[in-house]
Length: 640
Ligand code: C2E
Ligand code: CA
Ligand code: CA
Image 1 (cartoon, rainbow, N blue to C red):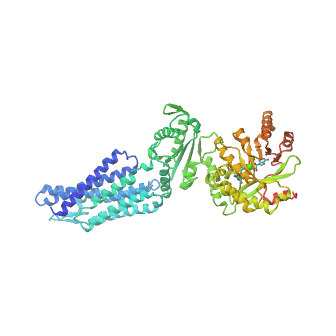
Image 2: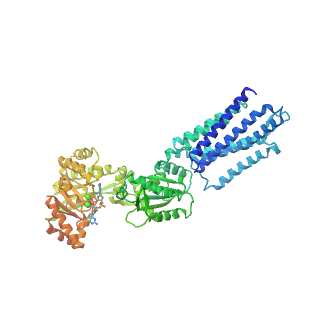
Image 3: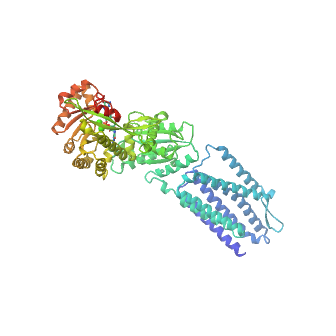
């Protein structure tokens, strides 16, 4: 036995042991759920078998001349080596495809073709003892390659080439970890193959492959960082990654989004972390519907199921099942609770075509003004609109598509113009004019609200200055502020900076803020208002009567005007109870010594109703709708 031979035996035995331990490890970790996992296991088994065969060949080969059975053992092992080895490249290809998110569901032809090529090659190797096409031994027991071997190598090369192709097209959708894993495996395996090609005696290839597979096992097959620790299903990161590869590889799918809509107040009754407890109960149920690795927890209280049966009824069936399940109570630790849910079903590609849009959909609340539980098809139009508005918003400032409208306000005493409220509009080439109710909530979510409110304030300052509004009897212009923005550090300084730079006296700016705050935020807001008031600005509380009017907190705030919401006025017209509510609200505000503006005045009758109650200002369609700047200026100049 020469030195190379004994080294080769050591290496292949080592490869065998490495593969064997990897097999045992993978089994005990229970990583066998997905097709990808199963292909990986097959790779391990094949390399293990190959190592065993090579060891046997190398061990018996030196005794071939002296013992017929040694010769037979050596040759049988060689034969099986080729039988197994031919499977390796196609397996590696299918493994890579899986890692890249390619499932061949839409391209079964391609799958059959590739399987056909593989089977033909395998068959050629299998019948080699009869044909000697792939390799043969001469009468001196010397080994020779036949032309079939070229075909075997060619097939392997095609599969490796295709694997690389998938890798490059999916490169962007792969995490750094996955890229590293595959490249590591490929480079270790390829260096092994090269060394073996240069020095045919040294059987290093299998050892290199075993080490490469160990790398894959640690880097790719280990999914700890893709799993949600509380529920055992995939996490948000995994969802984004997998979706990305499905989309890149044109792998159509359906997403069923399950959002638990039960308010926290109810789930808070149970001590431990309620959303995790609810989450695991729901996840356990979902596992009975679809395989674990098709479930993703996209948020604390939302799950996404990925279903591949394109054009089938399965997604809707699942949605119906979930809906029915939510009609029954859930056992949460030792408490029983009823949970509510909203389910969205969508095809991808379809309403959404990118990971960003998909995540947007998964994260967005379905409309609350309906009893519907399942949203699909046309029900998702609201999303399409939201997505288009969000896109439109992103470039609106830079392309000058915001416009400030003005709605005049009047003194009730002599019905003269008192001021105006600045109301922003968004223009879109396709959607036309978009109203703030549709885009302000989105802007508050994505942080654009700061810039929008700054823009409006600057426009208002310019108008006051350029048109010298105070000289025309305008007392102040009302500018809406988003509560979210007010709470941010540095807010007062920024606002102050804008107005001072524009050279406008601060008393002409009256900020409006909506009264819809939780009690805990009142303190911060109260401080902000004091600071702004201290600077000389004026302040109004907007939409009074719609929130959780915390009278004590409200009384402490240094407000100039309280704006009674239009719904209070409209109710007062409708019923006696409504009238009592309006009167009591006005009385309370009077006791706080604040001025009152009533908005939503649409008829003369409403004005008659308000006159004896002692309100100060009026605003509404009766006088004027919000109008563009030039029309507002005509009103100011008495030309309208
Ligand atoms: P808001 O501050 O309560 O504004 C009053 C809304 O009621 C305006 O709707 C106005 O057009 C409407 N309105 C006024 N009078 C009448 C009436 O007589 N009848 C009826 N049916 N409606 C009337 P708009 O302009 O669509 O604004 C909606 C909301 O968007 C505003 O409610 C405000 O909260 C927000 N908003 C508007 N502009 C801005 C802004 O520049 N910044 C911020 N942060 N929010 C804004
Ligand atoms: Ca307002
Ligand atoms: Ca209002």
